Amino acid sequence: MIELPSRARKIALFGGAGCTLIGGIVLWKESISGQKLEYGKTNKEIQTNIENKVFVVTGANSGIGRETVHELARRKGRVYMACRDLRKCEEERKDIVLDTKNKYVYCRECDLGSVESIRSFVSSLQAKEGKVDVLINNAGVMKCRKMATSDGIETQLGTNHMGPLLLTWLLRPSLAAGGGGRVLYLMDLDYRKGEINLADLNSDKEYDPGVAFNQSQLANMLTTTNLAEQWRVDNVTVNAVYPGVCSTNIKRHMGVDRSITGNIIANPLLWLLTRTAARGAQGVIWAATDSSLDKMTGKLFSSMQEIEIDSKARDKVLSEKMLAVSKFWTGLENNKSAMISR
Image (cartoon, rainbow, N blue to C red; front, side, top):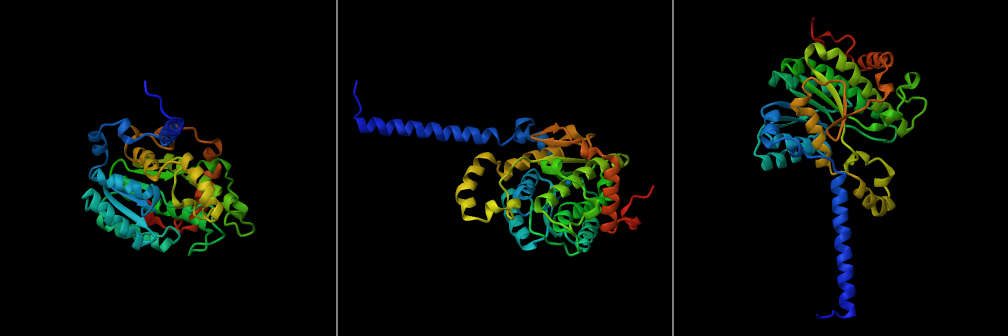
């Protein structure tokens, strides 16, 4: 038996330890990344749930929205990328079309901070499509400095809640036309920390980025449970999905991405604890398309499973008050054309 020199033994020992460490990191990263669609369904089943259906995805030029569009296009869906920045949207659309060979991917301008832009988007879409099968409310902003939308609404409340509510409501006839439309809100679990401050809903008196963000998330969760009950008559389901902690640019306004320390030290550590946008999109696509969820509404999903909704998001009195305010602020209160006549 040949004995390795001392130096060679040390190199082999360190090499083995390094490989073990790397292997452990890879396994850890995979364990927190969540399931893939293929784990529970065959490719044929997934394709059947998506092919030829019409999808609208907001905030579709980056992160989870972009990866969702890519997967839907790969499965032959007709996808509308609703984005504020058309230049970035067109760049991503081009790459997606070239990769998937699916020409039925479209860029459309839709600024969720503008009532006029949202109405224009809906009008254009309804002129081309007789129905919408799935609306995915993905776009959002997180813990930004105090700003306002073009309509004077605090940016997080306006972009995360008011805009999506208006878009969802205006698309109600299109969602009902398909005989089984779905609305899906991407949700942050910090909605559980949120409080609806009706006395200062627009944060005019006091503004805290985290408080405003949590309020916008609770407003969306209240909308999910409220509309789920109201829209049963149209066979339109309204659900929410938590995609997990993902590496996307939604946290671009937070300190971790705006400091040298954050980028050098914190981000590598966060990488170990986060999912990629592509893996985060898997649960979104499942909630938006899986046939087992056809009749499920008013639910919150995570990692392709239903999770409990906090009791504050089931407060019917509060949800009705929030919906009334939201409809008034977005101009829906007197807009009879947005309602389906009975």
